[in-house]
Length: 193
Image (cartoon, rainbow, N blue to C red):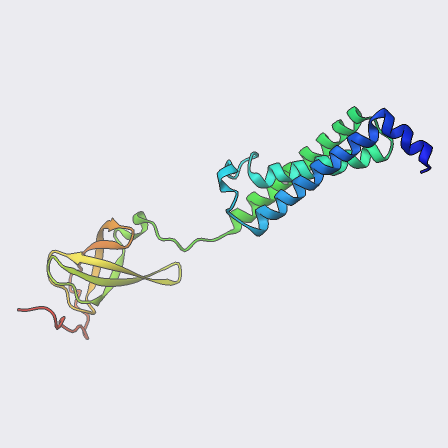
C-alpha cells in the first residue's frame, strides 16, 4: 500500500472505521480473557448462563470487531464491514453460549440437598445426648458427609439413625432406627444416666 492510497483511505473514513473496529475487537477479547482468568469478578455484569452472559457478549464483541476490521482491510465499506462483523459476531456468540452451556452441564456437584438428606440413614459418630448436639456421618455421591445432629433421645456412638428433618445446611434432626444399636456402639462418656 503506497502513501497515496493510505491518504485516500484516511480521507474517505475507511481507515478510521477500521481502527474503531479493531479497538472494539481488542476490548471484546480482553473482556473474554479477563472473564476466564478472573472468573467471577464480572458477575455483577453477568446475566446468567443465557445468551446475555458475559462470555457470550464478550465473544460477540471480539469477533464482531475483528471480522469488521478484516472486512474493511479487504476493501469493504464501513456499512458492509459492520454487517459482516455482526453476522460473524452472532455466529461466534452463539458458539460461545453453546460451549459454555456444554461445559457447565458437564460439571458435577457433590452438594447434598435437604431433600436428599431427609429419610437417609446415617451412623452416629459423636454420641448425641437427649435434646443436645452430636454428630452423624453418611456417604453421599461417594463422599463422606458429616453433620451436626440432635435427637429427642440419647443415642450412643455407632448407633444407626434416620434423618427426619434438616435444621440448617449443616445440622439435622435424627431418630433411631429399629434395632439400630451397632454391636460395637459405645455409650457417650459425657452422658449421665
